[in-house]
Amino acid sequence: MSLRNSLAAVLRLMRISRGLSKDDFQGVIDPKHLYNLESARSSVTIDTLEAVASVLQVDALTLLTVAASLEQRESHD
Image 1 (cartoon, one colour):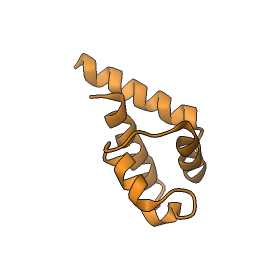
Image 2 (cartoon, one colour):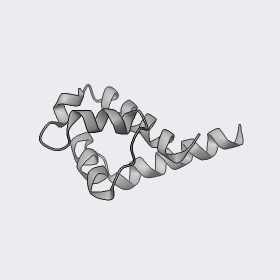
Image 3 (spheres, one colour):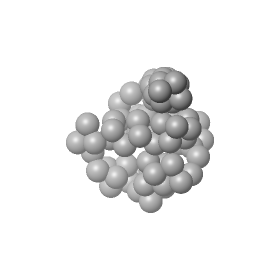
Image 4 (cartoon, rainbow, N blue to C red):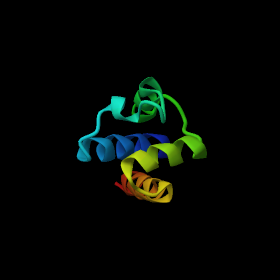
């Protein structure tokens, strides 16, 4: 699993676990762009990751760390 795919999964799971819809990110990030990030169809910039993280109420570094951990775990299986 690539880091992009891992981050996509982490973003999707964090959003869903917090009971947020893609529309809850309106004004911060376009819901279509969030869909593309969660589907690993586009890459994320640091600025966008920080904006998404603020809505999720988590640090951007935490999102990257969890995604990297997932990616490493998947590559070893």
